Length: 186
Image 1 (cartoon, rainbow, N blue to C red):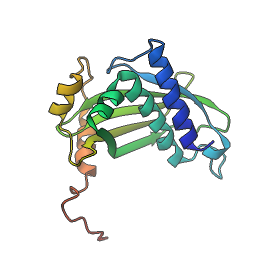
Image 2 (image 1 turned 60 degrees about the horizontal axis):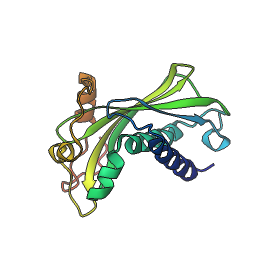
Image 3 (image 1 turned 180 degrees about the vertical axis):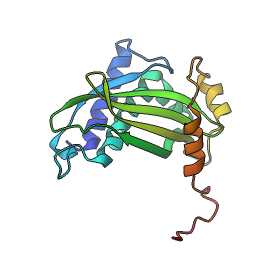
């Protein structure tokens, strides 16, 4: 099953869960259950490393919808884009293996929000990704955190982001889009 169909199923499922009163607090951990499908595996017969990021997107959709952030963004003509992410693999997911994608907002810096996603089997982490996402306007430009929190409220109880996450975000940043970024290999 292509990821687009899974995305639609997750969106519909998240909307249903909201109607059933299963919304999430912005600091809560969201969870969806997935199965490693034949379209997810590579020649080594385990989940392809690139597929993890696509499937973690599904957890992000569930989290955005169930916390109410997606509707607030839609009303204002905002959308989120991933500006950077880092993934760490611990164990391989095998064909037909069921796993949870657990997702949580873990904080923000002056320009972006941070999320963590985990692939979990029987309570054990198989892979983890840290995502830095920016809010943009459909009409152009970025949405500041002040504007975001004014619209949806600043959640109490966000964990303190570990210092290495800030260091990683700074070290991995590319120049802004209005600046030159030539591809020169040293």
